Figure 1 (cartoon, rainbow, N blue to C red):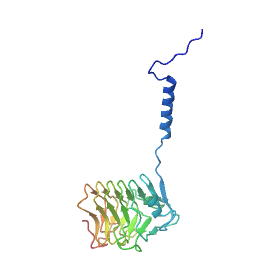
Figure 2 (figure 1 turned 30 degrees about the vertical axis):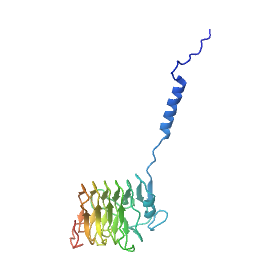
Figure 3 (figure 1 turned 120 degrees about the vertical axis):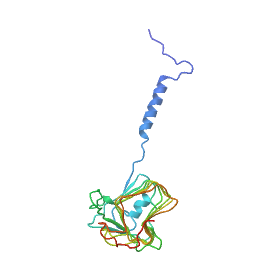
Figure 4 (figure 1 turned 45 degrees about the horizontal axis):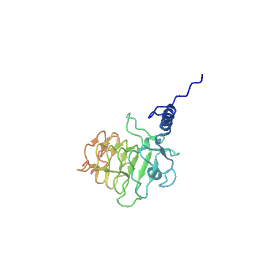
Amino acid sequence: VKQAAAHPREGQVPRRVVLNAVFSMVVTAFLVVPAAADVRMVTTTADSGAGSLRDAIADAVASDSIEFSIDAAGVQTISVASALPPIPAGVFINGITQPGASCDGQGWPTLMIEIEGSGAPGGTDGLTVSGSDVTVRGLVINRFPGDGVHVVGASGVRIECNFVGTDAAGTQGYGNGGVGIRLIGSSDSPIGAYNLISANAVAGILIDATSSDNRLSGNRIGTDGAASNNDLDMFEAMR
């Protein structure tokens, strides 16, 4: 005897339709994959063009890291002729990725990437941070007419393992024309550890009155990397 096919009652969704809908939802869930963070690699000391720091900053978006792999021995100097693009939110600039560099807490940093601005127009800052949750690590920043690092309107900015206003050895004063590290309207940003901030014309670190809840720790200010020469800049101060 052939059994008659069951028909759904009024208002009831057929089982096949329900299963198809569930299958579609599962497939869609697997297809929606968040964009992976990119590594923007700096491979040249040129001020612009493919592989340059300028292009890496301009192309970076949140969660990207900027790393260095310049195929040459010794300290690599990037001479900046004009202001670099502001660093957007969530970007990690990591100079410790250049071969030979280190900042492991077992001694003072060894830094291999120098960014210098002696040829930049008046008032040019070294790095401008305009987005929150940025990390600047393992760079030598010197000879800019303005500030070494200028942070404005951001929170959660980490600045660590940098030499600001000295040479790569941390023994000679190559000061910036403004402040070493300046925070304006910024909050919850740890400055340190292992920053050397010396020989800058206005101050080592300046945090304005509109900033709050920032933390300074483990920095050497107004001395050399070995903390043995307190005359590197007689005018160095924290304000």
